[in-house]
Amino acid sequence: MPSTTARAGGVFLPIIKSLSLSAGSKPGHPSARKLGSYLIQSQFQSAGNSSALFLTAAAQNLLCLKLAEELGVIVTSPWLTWFKAASLPAVVCLLATPLILYKLYPPEMKDTPDAPALAAKKLEQMGPVTRNEWVMVGTMLLAVSLWVFGEALGMASVVAAMIGLSILLLLGVLDWDDCLSEKSAWDTLAWFAVLVGMAGQLTNLGIVTWMSDSVAKSLQSLSLSWPVAFGVLQASYFLIHYLFASQTGHVGALFSAFLAMHLAAGVPGVLAALALAYNTNLFGALTHYSSGQAAVYYGAGYVDLPDIFKIGFIIALVNAIIWGVVGALWWKFLGLY
Image (cartoon, rainbow, N blue to C red; front, side):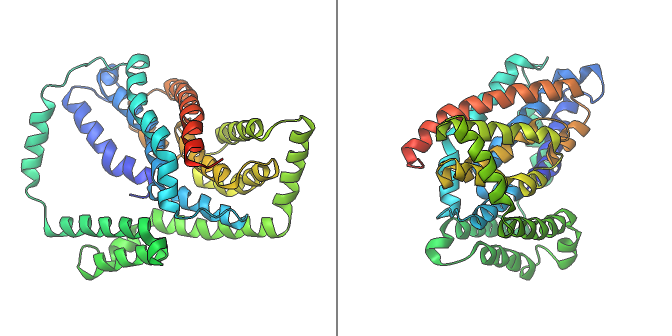
């Protein structure tokens, strides 16, 4: 599912609410800390790493690579390169986040013995997997395979996506009304067209180059090596998101400029582009307005606003340490620098 907001609202939140309510944990109530608050925070803070793990896990990921191409940074075999570079630090964070939150923000309920029986009952009520569901699974596997091996097959990712959509339409899994009702997808398409076009014009007019050269001269005057400049620019790009209410908007406004600054400071292009793109996913859990999924999880009513900011900042530091240490060693091993 190439949308963190869709996964949050369509998959995870209904599951979390069902589990929480069955355990007597109600939103906007003192019982929220019984189970629901922990589950919401755990999923919310983990979602950035799951989105960073796969190129096709979030809309802004593809936009980042498109903007990088505008500046001459080409990521070969993008799906595999993205996944390999993100795999180790993202998996470490996905394992560490629930454990850290269990210590910092523990649920009052530590055991749920009725959960397996409840799950089995719900599955029985749903019945066997339907034909359309099997077609959907097969089409998804085909589309992802074509994305992964598209370069070797000489197939563009757009063609792979169209093949998948065509199969679903032809076999009746979806109809055109279903496509038209996906307002967020059309919204994303319109924004991508505008943002990519604007970013291209800013580059062509020399504005991005002028900004990057100005910052690069400032960094050079401080006699910073490229690894130090890399850290300063990545931290700045991350923290500026406190001023943004959209990951895609942040990318459209600042990604090209910050990538150009990295290049001017001597940072390897692919490393800079991927690190900025991963950061774009990680800052989605900073606040209750930092991403679409943030609004979904906060709106569930299980977490108080101060806790969102406090936990968001702490987990951001944890992510920075893990990606900065584990990621740096892993990227060195992969030959990104």
